[in-house]
Image (cartoon, rainbow, N blue to C red; front, side):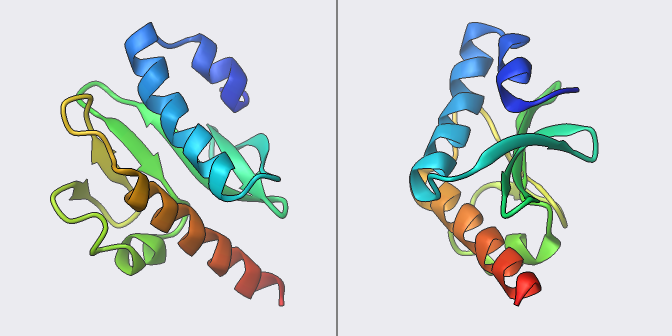
Length: 117
């Protein structure tokens, strides 16, 4: 699929704004993130590992933190949102709050840091 910037260029204005907001928020929490691809999805990377991907699907926008543990760790912040073992879904009508994005990004970063110790 390509990196984040290329993916954003393929989206409608409305979808782009929703997806870009999550990526921008992630970058504000961890400024030195890089763009890349993991499991065929554009993502932001931290310390060379996939941190988060945000993709438009038919009925929602999916956030993929590359670890089911992250979803469990952030359960309180994700209350009211549909979650699976490895993703969170949101819509334009019910966007993911900044606190939830912050929690997802921070939890994934902490897991990556624990892997590299």
